[in-house]
Length: 522
Image (cartoon, rainbow, N blue to C red; front, side):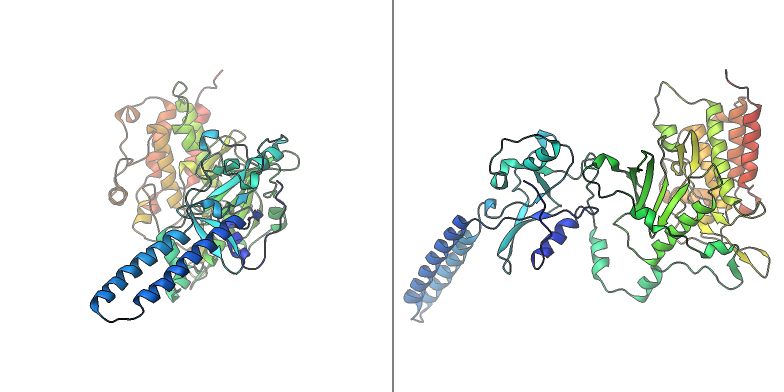
């Protein structure tokens, strides 16, 4: 069976739209079969029986006002309604045929096959006289074996595929192997937020933060610009269903999905698109504008990820095949632990990446603060861990009266890996990145997160009081030069007051010097 029907117009379009919303990046045609003529005759016969029963009811109880007749009438009415429901309600889901959605993925495990009529409710569109099955608890996707065989280049022996339930394969969208399917989950709160009236407060929250305020203006004119190149984004072969291996969903961050695809010459690239749990509002457009601008300004640095195109909430970036620092620390072969020199080399790359972001325009003061430094923000490309993901960054303004940088604030600072001034919601500078960099050094030394076993609120309180994560005595008393240098860099990065905290470039220099003094391994 080929599936070349066009999306139907009119009342049927509502059902097609519902199905398409469940697998977001594909607009696939949907085929629906009309109800069986045999079933329609059965329904007419049942309706005739009910009409005859109603005529007899009127004959027997049409006259008389005594209480006995009234009570009998009420009992008979109850039985009549119950019989009506039983007779007219379909007992076989074959009354309405399943929706067959064509897909070109591999044939799923045969153990996953189920009756395609399960977990559906009847929905009858009286205006079009067509019936469809609508998912109840979660989206249901099915495909026909004939379609799979056709795309695989093989023949199938199944006959009358369209009307045979055994020919239908249920697809479990929660399994990782179905990378081309995305289920859009909405919580009750999110659904309520979509339906409720928008207040002035909601409207203000969805706007981008005011950038120029009072004496604080842009420190560089590029901070006010945007450089979209949408044609390149639109050329990404996201709809190449004949070659599904060309496009794959790798992972996602909080804001965006990460897709891998291949260029015409085989070069692998990454496309980031905003997740459907977020709204297309000005605040998010500005968030990804800053991400693209920061990456573009840092093109000359070898310690940050390159960007090749940007449009709206999407961006085209370098592909990483080496994972991130989190994976490098925690998900490696236990028989192959990293050495102190390797840890020092990774720490040096981290400091160099942050220093590059802070000195993109001037070594005297920063124009960009990343504000979300963690070990998983550094991804390995060509053997180097590069700084990535600037969609939480802040552009640092300039006070034209005081002739100095203006601080900024961020309205929400969760987690246990931020600087004391962030949890105090005090004015902040690029030095928050330096503090968070110390947390990565801690992970490299201790192979765990600071305050890993504490609740978030308790950890934040400790950080504001000047307490830091526990360091083992073996690290403190170590005589290994690489461990000593990394421990010193961590302590200096964790300086409590931002004004006393060293710049990222100073920490990078400290680590570079220590690494240069170590003997070259043969």
